[in-house]
Length: 81
Image (tube, rainbow, N blue to C red; front, side, top):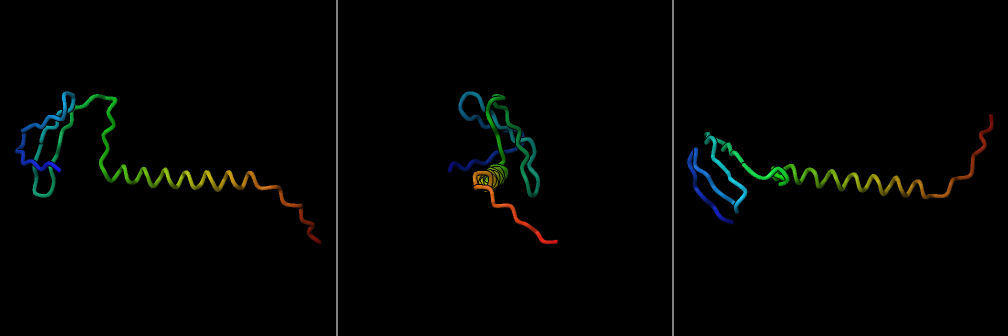
């Protein structure tokens, strides 16, 4: 991992197409500006983890639903009145 110190207004270039600017430095957070091609997906790390969990849950639901559909139909039950 590369660790750098930057001040407000300073920039960092990643490759030829990505430019990161330190917009504001506060007591407990840093605000960054990112210029990148529109086809490049940029996600905060915690959102990626959330999306993976959500996708896994959706896959499990689909599997259960598919299994239920593929189960042979149960015999009808008679209910005495």
